[in-house]
Amino acid sequence: MRTVSFRDPDGFIFPLDEKICRVVSVEAAGRLLSYLDKAECRSLIEQGKLVWTKRASAETAAGVLESGDPQIEDRKTRSSVEVLEHENVWFPSYPTEWPAGMLREAALTTLDLTQALLPCGLGLKDATPWNVLFRGPRPVWVDTLSLEERDPGDSIWLPLAQFLETFLYPLWIAQRSAIAPHELFLLHRNGVPVEIAWKSLGITGRLRPAAFHWLTLPHLLARLAPKPKYSKDRKLSDPSSAREVLRRMFASLRRAVEKTTPHSSTATHWNDYSVKCHYEERDRQLKRDFVHGVLKTWKCGRVLDIGCNDGEYSEMAARLGHEVVAVDADAGVIHRLWLRSCEHDLAILPLIGNVANPTPGSGWRNAESKSFLARCVGRFDGVMALALLHHLTITERVPLAMVLDLIAGFTRHSAIVEYVSPDDPMYQQLLRGRDHLHRGDSRHAFEAAAQQRFEIAASLPLPANRRFLYHLVRKGK
Image (cartoon, rainbow, N blue to C red):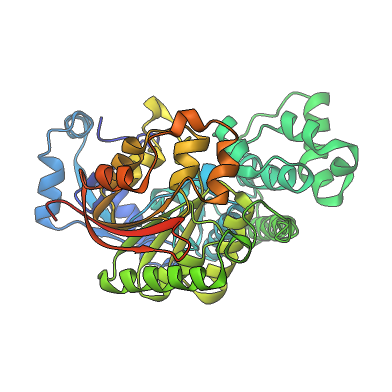
């Protein structure tokens, strides 16, 4: 099933090659383009907070409309349709992969839009992190069809509950427990229900001023009385008063979000990895020089750093002009790498993930949000797998051939892979006496397996001959 965006009755997303198209009714297309032509929306696009949108070229529109997709054919039988093209954020990521700081930034971007759109009579009909993607470390709102004309006298923001459950409640829970937001979204794709947030925060958490206002009071009132039905007739006679009510609400939400500053100093397993790893300083410098030399030979492109640890090599690649997706299972190091990427304006998208247990697809038929592996296949010009192989083959018990197949499937051209021999202290530490399971592990066995998929362009044994670096080029490239 190709089209997986279907929840908005006005239109749906349809990818065509490297273009992101949206099939919409003619009426919806006209409304949207008129909204985006307003000065406030143009400013948001210029600031990078909203993706650009335009009418698709005749060639692109024909490619979409003549694709034979059932959803398009069904829409064409019911109404006249038009094809729009959106900016393509080349690697989509989701809340199930973001550290708390990225979720917080996505929340602030959502509020930026609501506040900027208020003066021109527009609003958002959705307020969920699933409508936000990241260009490198910076968030951008991608669901332009969420823009709608606001009733001037209406002081009620219908997506408020959605905003609380998908942004504020997960951030509060993360501050007061060991449960990170990305873990919450794996359980609650549509956000944390108010009842669970209530139980999770405890008595002291519920009584904090912001939580009392946005969680405790609504929860208690809901228990005392049935939920009132929303009526569009309930509106203020003065539009300026309605705008002021909304403005104050958005400002209050912003203050609540800003106070959820994630903890960035928490010690984690991979904190300061580059300094505390099993390398002598000379070996560490040789490794840096080798990786830097290989990265310089790659044309500026897209690089995946699997098991990025503290992100030293992701930063190296970004400073050489590559766009980097950096992945590690340690949420703490990913959060700190995101902070550094923002501070130094590096084209790095740091994501929480474990390739041995990757983020699954989710939503309708597990296809609304693609799995991490599906998003990676054939998307990268180069892949780095440094100090990773032995963790997968020993700790995760994944056969070497399968790991190399995974890397070959991700890269269109090259890879840098580090092989750790059985003589290495870290290898022995991970082995824990299970020597009989890895009797055939050797450098020669690794090279033989690698050469079934790659050409070995260069290699470097580190002085102690316990670790070896390889520059691999996919065969046929």
